[in-house]
Image 1: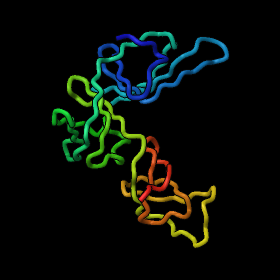
Image 2: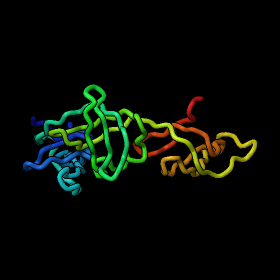
Image 3: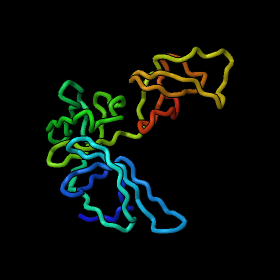
Image 4: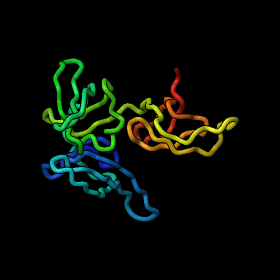
Length: 188
């Protein structure tokens, strides 16, 4: 199926010269003069090589036939990351380069959107947020209220972020899985 380049988004899979690529970023650039272009950073699925291409925004690109379904994350071992289709109980294994920066946020039983091509996982989309515990941060100062300055913190998944100064070790917070940034304190 052909689509115009400007309609491509992160996670989409395209077929270029018989090879499959997953879109990492897609940016539409409109210069003052000249033709608008779409710059696409993508990873070749077969070997993980990253490629940057520019297309005129009206140029047609072949979108690959991909199956997007919800899967449950089970566990990670030496073979890769294991997921189960909750409807059929069929299991698939994704390699570490497919999971990429999403790896620290995967939690047992988490529902994710997994894109597969010929039953091989090629891209993952996490839920927008994850609840994590702070395992290391500077102690909070009594009487200190929320201010515009944040302090560094290490989360249970190993990701470093910044949190408001009143949060202490053991507090559960909600972070954005896209970049690990603090969103809010978890309720309860």
